[in-house]
Image (cartoon, rainbow, N blue to C red):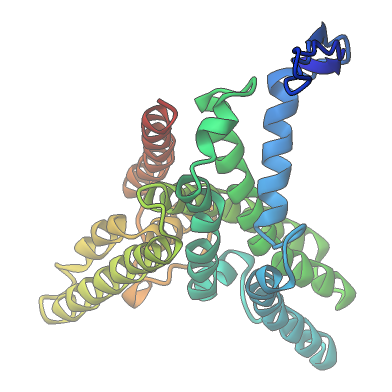
Length: 311
């Protein structure tokens, strides 16, 4: 990086109408922070932007409102448990994100386009790549920032539930185990939703189109899967349970049901599928591979997308 050091040597013509300035340069000898610093800065800026920090008041309203909406039901449950001296929380830690999945989907729909669509619209991505930062650095920073923002959104109410359970003097070991299981579940959910949201948002520079597309993918897939599962459950009642196995396999085709099936198979959670029929261990392994495969595929698609953008 060079810093201009003006050295004016005027050369005047006979009519004293033209001046030529000799602009000298000297080598920059300050600190060079490199790619890792640039990547961390992009991650920090993107994470702050996901909650409107460092931006206008208008940009803070929706993410902060959704954060409050996520936490208020947990606080109410805690208050009820403490007041009634209940022996357990009304909702399991692993079930909370499933119940609040509409709020989570709305957050992804609003913040994924904010994270990447603006860079595409205003053509600032090539400017990032003109610095000591590469495509992989940009993708990792954006992916990690949105996943971290989602984890904060989904883990905060679980922390409220956990602290409230301890204040209500519920069993420490059971609550700690449930809290840990819930954190694992929302960590996978955050990675999966962040990847899907960023892939969809990176297709268009129009933020409005990105928001609509993410909402459509999340809601339509969940609605279609839930409807098909309800039909399979109704058929299983008529054929003595022969169609119940299809319920678990249908759950592979929606992000939120993928997380539901995965945690019911491996984290001891109760399933939200019709009839409470969750995947067994064998089916759960397919769910795990599907979740990890979608996360990896999302990262790969983002890498491919931004290699073209940077050209």
